[in-house]
Length: 514
Image 1: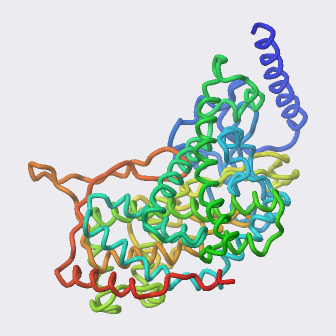
Image 2 (image 1 turned 120 degrees about the horizontal axis):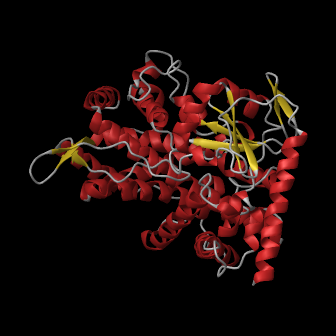
Image 3 (image 1 turned 90 degrees about the vertical axis):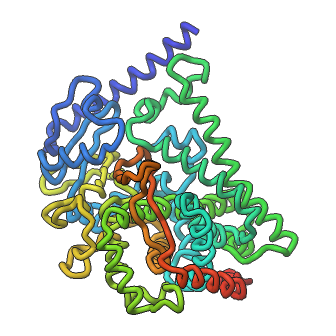
């Protein structure tokens, strides 16, 4: 054991020395300003363990458009302005198209996931496959299914409004499951959704910046789980088991159905029948399908949760949006995806949700070659952190940024928030085109049929919903309480009739019919 410890310490020191020598070789080049680092640990002691995006914005305000932060084994360049992110991630997307090596995520089973892949043939193949399910033409073909499914969500919300977060997750997951795997049955969905939720919890925990020493010192991955400071190995082992089960079970069930000729149309069934049959391609398909599934319900649940808080805190906004729906759609039917252009204020409410509390607060990229921006040297393999939260809370662009003001989009011409909230360039979220219509029609349908207000405790005191967020890859609000009640008996009847009508509609996705 003594010899093993000596080998590990030597390897870590060698890694640290190599990193230091690399920094010394580049020292003469003009680098961006930033907080003063300490020897060996850099600025690690100044980075908070949660809500890092707030501190990163403070540093951006102090040091400018590019701010440099040192951590053991890496240098971070912080970007807090839309125009800088656009220049680097859009205009120069060929350079800033890779991801930092997230060792802990890889150990926990997420090595080949699309969000963590470095730029290369596998990522290009994955995105090529996803375009078949997430391109504009494909997305439009999903609109009837989205419209068909929303009444079932409203019915669940009517029955148990206190379980609204669960209903948000299930509503988003049902649509994602249908596209990814062709699943429709309630019983078979339930376990798959639970597995997917647990897998996303693993992902969120393992990509948190600075949370795992093994991300800073990759050689630690070779430590056995019984070794001191190697408890991460046990977490990774459990996480990989959870992730593998969540990814593989629905895929191989679809594969079995394809082979027996009983599979419903889905992304997975279509890919299995049209792509090459080899282990590498099959593995790419499993991850692409899993990305469609898990990439939808977490961000959608977070967005709808923040929307719920906003409606409770800003009742005048809620009433204005409801009035627009009543005027344009009427009370004889539910809003549909096609109503978006006719409901500009509701669309502005949705835009403000993603600006007020973006579901993804930051996005890391890695430069694949040396570059320069406004005289600042950006070495290859530097990690660039795009701070979406800072961009969407820039007071020079969005006045009173901490307040929920949809009018900034429909009356004041504020820049679109969705073009930031879902990423930039070659790493933009592939599910953006389905997230837009699904979140919109869900928000509009809730407003058409329910009132959201602040909850009260047993003594009748108002419970103020907070805006505290959890830590992790997805920006969820901490658990909160609100009151969700039907707007009227007519709204209850509308939900009932809409559910009955939806049961008569086809549930096939024709784009995947072979």
